[in-house]
Length: 268
Image 1 (cartoon, rainbow, N blue to C red):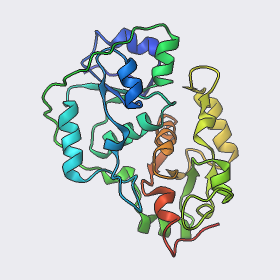
Image 2: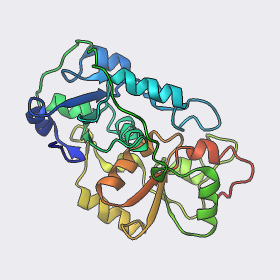
Image 3: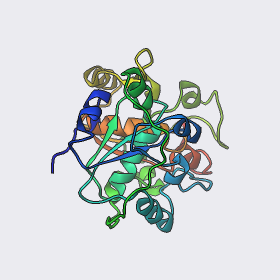
């Protein structure tokens, strides 16, 4: 089956729409989807991709809910999935991670999402799509995730680079969002929005430039990398970028909401 690269442009998606067996998934705000979306796109509310309960709402949904989501969108093994959102790629990147978690690899992210599609002057639709029947069997793939206990061991042994996608204020502890503030010891802060071109529809910037910026911070392809934010929303994009750069990257979906509310995790 023909497939698209991990990152695609609006023009590439427009050209592929009639050539491939596409499943388009829109993770925009529900109101934005109702006002207009890429023709043929199925809406997934971002909350459907999360566990949604404290202290780690960013974990995968419960197995029954995850299976129900896959059935609802009509995912099939022979499809090419393309995901996008209206905010620059956080939720869309998280959806790529979710698909990786269930063993589905043939997925792409639309750089810049809905904003890039609109800027390119491409058509939108208000039609609500009814998906087909799903034949996909979920096979959980733990290698793209890190759980709390494992991450504590990796941090203590200095065997991993932590990519913190939160704001500098959260990273430094100036902005407190949990019982304890700060960051995981040794973590590097590269806020998710740094990867976007804010003057060009929030498209992902040149990957070579991002690679150079990360290398200057000590993150490159020689590292085992774990990325996180507050609830693995913003780090959905940094996970996707790490994957696009060929990094050995995993996500910590518990993220700071779990780490910062735990009484015994190490914090700087």
